[in-house]
Image (cartoon, rainbow, N blue to C red):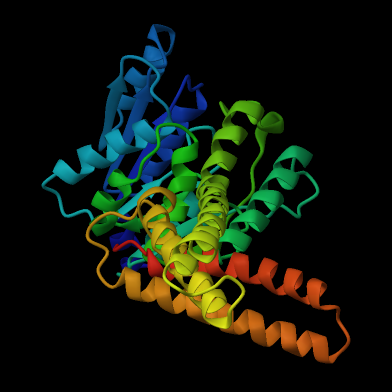
Length: 365
């Protein structure tokens, strides 16, 4: 019990809030009575009509209210809280973010505080059970689709990618504050940033609460879903664009070498030397361009990225070898060559993306 109390005292609760109702002061009081070291509430431009609620919250012990004059988005509100906590001289070890609409119980906040107390560099995610019968269908379907896409592109199954209940060590605050994003898409960008930096993300099952069909949420289904999926799929679509562009470069370079340059150097079109030099020369040119595009535009790697060129080359060689081997093996069992090539290259395309975002152009945490 003493260890639990210490873990709670060492934790800061950060709550971004927009136009809250009377549930917020009650929730803050329960958190304060449970012994949390500090509670930071960010009023994200709620307006004058809601100031009585925030004044009531500010009077609760160990509670601080920060205010945006205008609505700037959940991502900005969280970063405002992060910067405030980073400037504190206190010895708080844990940061827990929670929503203000009553979905996250105090009991679950305590559980996450206990998880972070072990000192590991981990992002703990309060994960709702979307198999329960009272879950709104749009929430169940949306989260399953998002979780599947995230698993495909980033290699980890997260059953609740939209959870606002998250916990991590205070040492991770600078990393979290540097992640881009202003509104709901920020939380997805955090998951992607953690995946790329190799920071483990561990789901922790929490109580699933939807009051009044989740009417209190400020999540706009179309607008905010578009922002989130644009984040999830953005780098992959850029990856596709980079690949298609480099296919054109490869074809153009091969044509120029095969039909113009090499014959002028005495290597006739159609000869074995011409075919090999033009093929490998074009692949080298397109690979250099592809590497630069992927590093700077697709994955937007920060810093020098030392050794990334070697890693990229190893991935390219491995993909070619595996593709050739796979086509050969599938051919042995009667699969048509064109179909075997299509199957292998499609599968390896996703593998190449995963390897490049998780290993080649991996960000330092």
